Image (cartoon, rainbow, N blue to C red; front, top):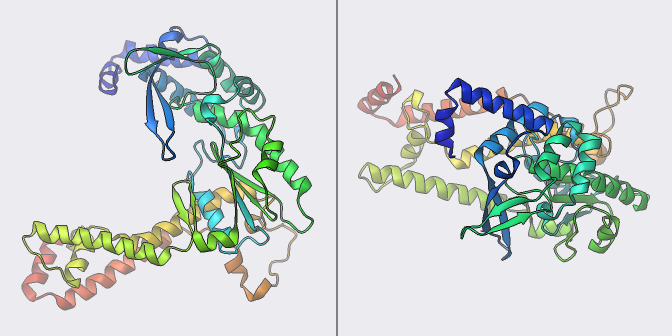
Length: 411
């Protein structure tokens, strides 16, 4: 069954009632038709390093059932505070901002960042660890997880041949990220305790952040992959020592570091230039559609002016990036306060007994050391002022007839 068919059939009350019943039965671990519902079409996606990522596309009715159970039963305290891979606000962004803050020296004492890589993490996770993680931290998911994973499930290849999935969680299963996170929670919490016990006396507390199987360790002293592997020897997944890397913060300041699909490092000026190139291409396309090949600063302003003010309303990337970055940072800060308030000086909430004002260190203001969550209205006001300034500039350059046309477009 495909999505369009499902949308049509759920308009019928008996079908909708049946699906509701099926979701309730999945929650109880008693749903019928398990062999059919857990079967998946296996697709192999090429990875950048030359490997293959197996994605299991399951039956749409099962995917719907799993998402309903997740929506109904998932609670934030089921996951470790440092695990941001399951319905966490901002997704990967808090980790990126945290590493960027470390690189900029805002988190004192953190000199090294270690990226931990696991071998075929999702597909090789010990299912016993999944069961134990559910029982200890998310008991509501024990029965659904047992229903899905206590027996091998069919994976159908493109040529029609079938192999069985009997280990780990299937990438493509809506419950997969949660179950994987529950399986490795104890191992990562134990890793943090062990690293804190062995750290130097002047080192800050070890900070671990994870987005599913992408794990980052922030430390004062250098960690080797072999040491981390020794601590994770009992983990439900195997560490890939060859791909686990430790970088010094000074090195990242020079060369940069790829983090969760983004980049942390000294590229601000280069990126600004790249954004301007994108804006130039957009402007050239607008002029091409007009049958004109020349573009002026006035054209750029009219293109970027909101439609309600008589412009085209095409947002310029060069202007958008600062606002987007700041808003992303503020959202990330809220997540990091909850995840790191007990260990990370940068995100520690002030004690109720602490003095209202304390001396700033290294001649930096307290405001610079401790970012504050800014209201979303601030970004709207910034855009409003930018648009008004642009409109004033446009009015000075337009002829009487052109201004009349702009006002007509704005009406």
